[in-house]
View 1 (tube, rainbow, N blue to C red):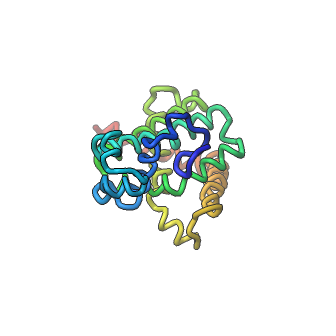
View 2 (cartoon, rainbow, N blue to C red; view 1 turned 30 degrees about the vertical axis):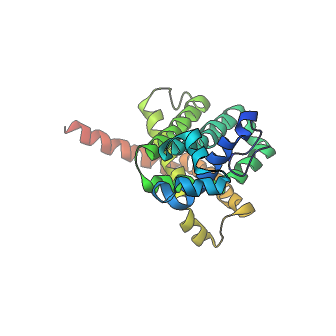
View 3 (cartoon, rainbow, N blue to C red; view 1 turned 60 degrees about the vertical axis):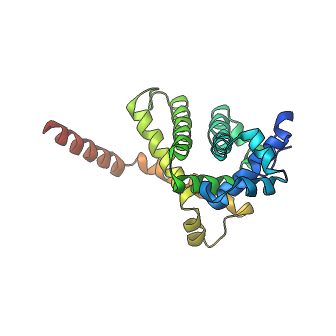
Length: 224
């Protein structure tokens, strides 16, 4: 049995006080940021003593690292691997992901706003997951290790991260809190958008636009 923060089956060691503290820290960091959250507030959220928090993690920065790792596990490894293996089409897989998403979206958005090496590390991991997915799924279009694969993965990560960072704006424009089952509206809209863009990508207009971009790039490179 998982929690609202880390869905799916959990190992015995992940059902300990250490895991409860990490889950509580996810909530506190998402709501208050790394500067606003305190060891005391995290301990109160987890129902443990501040001393136990320090015993398991030492410092708030170390606890932040554990939270980053948990978020990456879901958004990069589970999602990317789910796409690679086909598990992402499983109804329970999707249900678990949507159950975890609201908190994780708030956490990532806050991490990006706070900035610093921790936020950069999380986004780097997500970009690496995107690159793994692209090169595995379309190796001829995105050759492993190529600049094209890195560029496409970076743009894909930025596009998806934008959805996270602008979540409040999305909610306002879509006229919904985008919580609970309403959060599925984002995923469904994204699928429809990708389908439409896929059709556009094969159109004459897209071909002409691509040619124009390449010609512009080449003309500028020739003058260097």
